[in-house]
Length: 227
Ligand code: CTP
Ligand code: CA
Image (cartoon, rainbow, N blue to C red):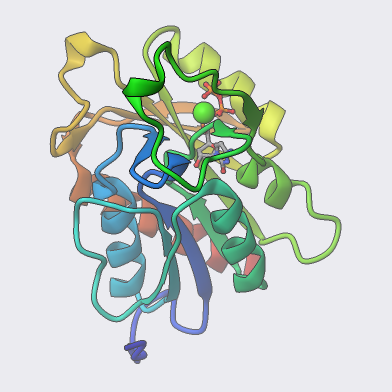
């Protein structure tokens, strides 16, 4: 159910959020995927909605429930996620929080692979579409604000700064997921917000608080663009 809030700085704004992992099938019972609960993307969608935005929430198979009051578009694979994102346009802002699998198995089998065949499967991979990069580089209908995430285990600011330029997005939220931080799978994140003007490092905080802070910044940026 998509209901409208009548108040908030994002009333009248349409925003899309990708979230969760994607699953890339190997056979009917097996897949490859990234580690992602979908918690951060879900929190972002909820926070944007709380500020009055109309939210399209495009989610892979996540462990957490989607927020209330948003349009939920469930997808499985990266290719399905790309199609759903393109179908959701135009939007004023897009936040790409999904942990998209970088590769898919070229020819998933119709029948379960069996050990009794002997040997190990000879899987062949293809690279998945880079959804964030594609949307960032749209000639027509590019959202005014495109925000990506970058989960990095080392040289976080350096890697994420290069990633922002490579993708062509406006902002990147760099997330330090090195095992020493214990972030992966928890309810907190250690974020640096990277924009063209440079990076600001936020204190480690709950994913809900990261989401609220990001939503505020998005509202501010869209308001500034309207001026
Ligand atoms: N992303 C995307 N489509 C992909 C891969 C990534 O939309 N096929 C988005 C993610 O949702 C995230 C951002 O791009 O917002 C960065 O993802 P990340 O995996 O960190 O970047 P990659 O370019 O895939 O680089 P890496 O080799 O570090 O995985
Ligand atoms: Ca990746």
